[in-house]
Amino acid sequence: MRLTVAALMMITLILLPGVSSYTVSSLVLTVYNDGYTKVEYEILPSEYSSQVELPLLGDHYENVIVEDGNGNPLNFRLENGSLLIYSGNAEVVKVSYYTPDLTVKQGVVWTLNIATNDSFTVVLPANAIVVDLSDIPLEIAGNSITMPPGNQSVSYTLSGRGVGGEKGADSLVYLALLGGLAVVGGSAYALWRKKKGQSSMPSREEFQARLENLDLNEEERRALLYIFDKGGKASQAEVREAIGLPKTTAWRMFKRLERRGLVKVLKGRKENWVELRF
Image (tube, rainbow, N blue to C red):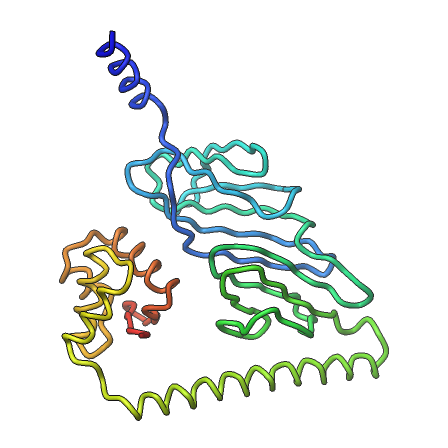
């Protein structure tokens, strides 16, 4: 009897479609003047899985599109605020939809609020003026702001809708904000330079000891050690070949390491490079 039950349980597990884990490769939030936000995910399903369950931001979703990396549509189902995606053999899954739930307006100030475990990029309207950020951004490029993971908010006003004095005041707030960020960034850089001057580059043994204190798998340790041996910077292809990883697996690994702040992936014209950050 025990053998029969065990056999039935094994058959059930084999027949059940696996809901996979995944890695968020990118999350982009494009905000429009009316407060609607376009949410765009690019996720990498784990290997040997056929389904992905992605919790969605917001409570209302419009024009949901799910595709593989080649733009082919994938089957999906919305359930209790999550998207169940039948990813099949897709190595990359792209999800996009619109929601009005991520922004609120008080007076002339709009605020985008988001809680996520991944870094994300906010693309504001061209006429937006930032007045407050919940945290120091990872990057600012034009009207795009990349924020770290966590409970984050971006507050902004829309210029061109008030008198000149109001617009000028908003611009001053914006310049003051950027000035404050520059001071913080400059202080952090100066402190880093000071610490760098006080201590020389660690030896290979010291660097290996640092790796032992981090929660890394064997491939990640070997990759970081290889980059260290190359002077702290190496091409992705070079690292991948050195440790014998498939291209997709290596891509996921570099994304994990970058999100943890251990490396920085630098995009080149012909190939990407990986640089140590600790």
